[in-house]
Image (cartoon, rainbow, N blue to C red):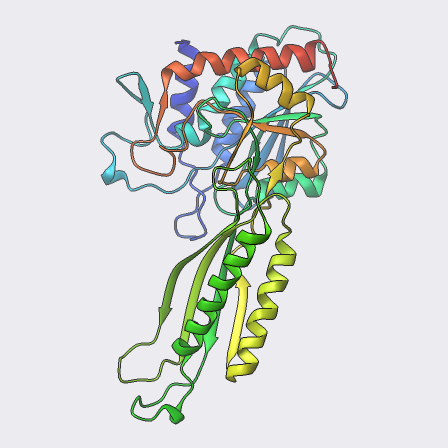
Length: 383
């Protein structure tokens, strides 16, 4: 394996860049961005560091000039980790039995040395269309980095490869991610006399039943055979309410997860749920507050006949498929880029102790990235 690849990988893993909705755990990604910028500047890239929030930034590194070309994209943040559950230090790279271990090594810091290694082969080559290496912040928590790119309307690439862990299988579409919260405010009172209060738990059972009916409606209405689970899913994730068995429950909260298909609109889904909850609140004389836990990640789809999809399928000898997890692809699609997701890591190891990257997967990814750069940047194909 290339010595520079390993050195760069080790340096990236050694820089903690956890993003989390809990401010006590959330960390800056600036050190990672500045390190990537230093490497890419040395290769002749023009590097723009885009501030996103306090301690957070994106990097847009461009080799060549003009619009179009190829974007190689990844996020610089990782999820939190429980270091005591790892068999090695999560912030250093360890090799065992053909695998490299480290926090974020598959999801997805390992993609950056691969992209840089592939780009280095063309650093002295005249490009007909630009090569852009894109590094974002907060993909694991809020998608703030990708949203900032949409707001700024850059980069202006034509095709994009996101190096999320796909076990070298090309992905052209994924479901959206919605995480929602329902709060019911009732009236507490002595349990011996129900008329003394209005039980929030009683109302929540009605809400949960209605959500399960809604789930069945969605399953019947929407079907996409491109997915292993071809219908939208709705999972009732956690519930909290009440404080004692002899008190009428005064407050109750439910959190649930909904994964829409690409043909579904998140605003329409929320409007439907709001209407249903409003009917329940009026019928039961109770206050119901419905709100997203976060804005949500839309579903994404690049058409099967996209020139990028066809080329990546030819390179990998695999038909582009789907995944249920979310990525930054919908935001790149908003920027007008055909987008494919292709990475060396496995989603099965992401977000858990002893995350690893199989060494045997690195070489094929490097080869494919070089072939894509040659096709879209050196030869300048726009279709």
